[in-house]
Image 1 (spheres, chains in turn green, yellow, orange):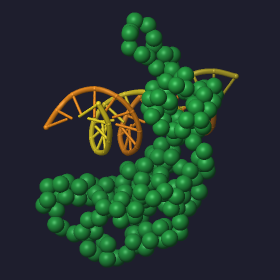
Image 2 (image 1 turned 90 degrees about the vertical axis):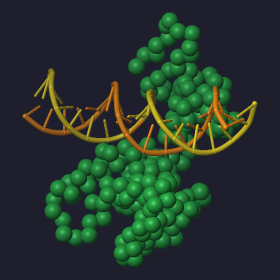
Image 3 (image 1 turned 60 degrees about the vertical axis):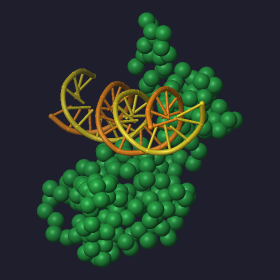
Image 4 (image 1 turned 180 degrees about the vertical axis):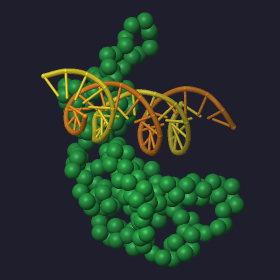
Length: 198
DNA sequence: AAGGGCTCCAACCGCCAGCGA
DNA sequence: GTCGCTGGCGGTTGGAGCCCT
């Protein structure tokens, strides 16, 4: 995609794939000044890019300690379970997978896991399939949200999942949290009492 | 070998919430 | 209170590369 630059006084930014040179400029600037005020980053780093584009590039590609590709079975399983619980809240899911970005998880879900689940849904399953529920759960979550805002939702119990799991704390990808989550996920009380997470 | 269809993923877009003036 | 700016998020798109016929 070539930048369109003629006939407009409005600033037109570069679009499309980032070059190695652009990456280097951005990384250098952030190394010195930090990753904050993306508009300033975009201007001061001498990149003809908008702040949003710089932010995205940094978060999804240039950030240190980033893992790319090779999603392990454990990670896949965790993604499936978290998606079952949280729906398409990719940033929350990514927050539980160190080094993974929301974009990567979203892409992985759309290209791998959603198909996997569709295949399983098509084949008749008698067991308690964990992967067949996401759509229903998202609907439940939305319904709970709706109910909580209107004040009429008193069927079952609802949690604020952010509060409950304390998503504010970074780097807590420990067995403790995972175990807590997995225990909850399989707790019959949860299903019996129609508990949903919002 | 070629070309058409498919897959995957980087990047963009639009919306929304938070915050300061 | 409201307005504009900014950052963050999820959905969507476009193109490069792969696969199949």
